[in-house]
Length: 68
Image (cartoon, rainbow, N blue to C red):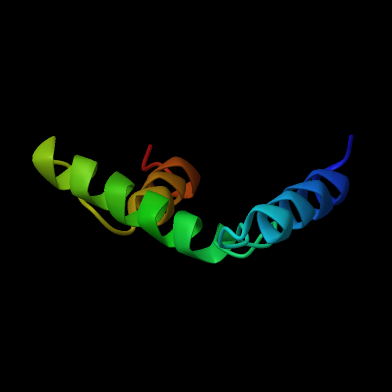
């Protein structure tokens, strides 16, 4: 059963029982992504690592030409 089919089944069941309908699939995806990003930043701060720019810093350090 696909996500859409499950959503339609749950919506129908909620309508018949007089309950509130479930949220549409994908409706909260952006919110979840933002919360995940904030959690990772918070975890970095707690671990005393830089909260922003970690990937750029690592790439810059890796790609920087080394002095001979």
